[in-house]
Amino acid sequence: MNKNKNLLVAIALLLALSSLHAQEAMSSPHRVTSKKKAKVSAEARAKAKEDQAKAEAAARKLREPFWKRFDEAMLEQLGTAAYTPPTPGATPAPTTRRIPPAPFDSPPYPNGDWQIGGSTIIGDPGELSPYPLMQAIYDGPGGQAWKDSKIQLYGWVNFSGNISTSHPSKTSENGNFPMIYDLRPNRMELNQIVLYIERLPDEAQTDHVDWGFRFSALYGLDYRFTFSRGWFSDQVLKHNSYYGFDTPMVYFDLYVPQVFQGMNIRIGRIISEPDIEAQLAPNNLMASHSLLYGFDPYCQEGIFTTTKINEQWTIQAGISDGTDVAIWQKDPGRQPTGTVMVQWTAPNQMDSIYVGDNVINNGEWGYNNMQQVVGTWTHKFNDIVYSATEAWYMWEHNAIDHPTNDVPFQSGSFPVRSGYASEWAVVNYTMFRIAGSSFISVRNEYMNDRVGARTGFATQYSEHAIGLTWWPDKIITIRPELRFDHSYAAAAYNNGRDSSQLALVTDVIYHF
Image (cartoon, rainbow, N blue to C red):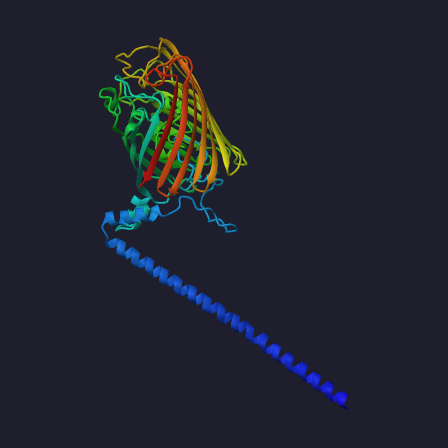
């Protein structure tokens, strides 16, 4: 009897416990749901509070004067990182780009896509995040109309300083030459103040024709290396001014998506299509320029087409009035001039080859009427290291060893003997990413100026440099470098007194 009683008590206890667990199981989802609701409600309140603060800030900025908005935008972007790494495991942001992702991060690199000049990137929507000037305009009255127009205003200030083993002489300040752009040793220079007014066409879409343009205005030392004869050229040719004004790019873009995978037609004054480097400071990997870049064609005026044939091939063809000469200027080099360039990119997006004949005419001696066959190979080893190698061969016929009425000035120099003038050069850049917002560049090059038509000295040159590019924030770039130059068959440096030159160069770019 006692055993039966104990068994009944045990069964009753088990039933009670089961009932208790069942009640807890039934009530637990309600508690979890309540907690979730409370969390969602808190997040909603925080979001509403944030949205309200943004709306109040936007309303306040509408009432502020422009310069106050500009100052606030400057301060905001000074505190913004230039490069933000993607969150591990996060889903990539959607993009309208119809070509593979850009192979490089920009910033810190000057460009995200493979090198190609004279065109926007076909397949890219052409969207730029605003710098402070444009942000201040967007935040003011009519800001939405500016966004809808896609017209942007932005620019930068670029200044540099150098310490060199060369010195000015009584006859010339250009002791660092043939190193350019910083011709004058042991001083600071205002290299560029640049303003862009531009509209980028949307070349990702394929359903309608789009258009764009760029007008660039430049003031500073570097105008000496962008002007064309007859285009603001008296500042140098007549007055030898070290600071001056130029408009290196003035062009109109027409994008026609129905031709193959898209064609861009550019009409106006452009920076010559080839080259790893460019005249505009933010587009360069280092503070100083290679010899190869310093003495090849700079600007051309004409009509230039870029056609994307398929994922791997792009073809460029154009016609201009020559190189570095205005269309209205009388000069032996002002004549119909062809340009043909071809770009190939590897299917795995690890290589690009960009080659062609940049200047095609009779090659008669004129102001920078050099003929140029040129090519660049860029290879991406991985996300840390990539390399770009460029080579060209240039020539002119019937060169003259002194200034004439037809050719009064030739980049500051003339060949040491008349006749056929040719030169060739090769340069390699290798980049090492050392942090999210910085990288190191190593540059090595060789140039043979056979009769001195580019530098005034018939000699071979070598140049070696190592530099750092660092973005402390979104609008400042700092680029220190150490550079060694040597000439072999003649003393070309320190105003013709030395065969070698060592220079420490640093520049700073302040974007606005």
